[in-house]
Structure formats: C-alpha cells, structure tokens
Image (cartoon, rainbow, N blue to C red):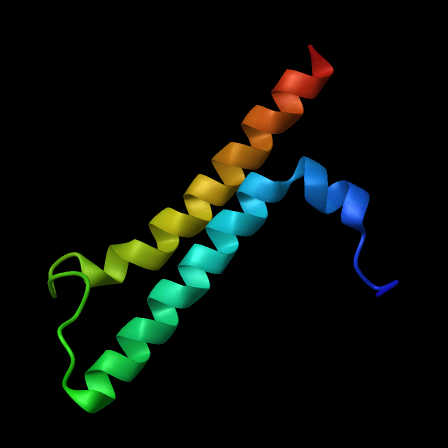
Length: 70
C-alpha cells in the first residue's frame, strides 16, 4: 500500500474519520430514499448536512495547522 501515506494519516486521523462518517451518512440517506428506510435527518435539515460536514473538516484542518504553527 504505497499509495497511502500512513504517517500523514496518523496526523490527520480526525479529518479522515470525519470524511468516512460523511460518506456513511450520505450513502445511508441515498439508500434509505430508495428502500423506504427512515432518514437520519428531517427534510428541512438534510440539505445542510453534507456542507456542514465539509466545513467541519476544513475547520479541523485549519485548527490543526494553527496548532502546529504555534
């Protein structure tokens, strides 16, 4: 597995975990719509879920960068 930088992943595990959670949420919502499963979020909140996860990822990266610069 030379295509994956394990050292960087060890440093950025929180961002990677947040990305995996975002993918799982989006995959569940996509399948739930087709199979009549209950959605994780109400209709009024659903459009904001993925952008919120992405913004959290960016904020986490910025916070991590600020911690390493100080």
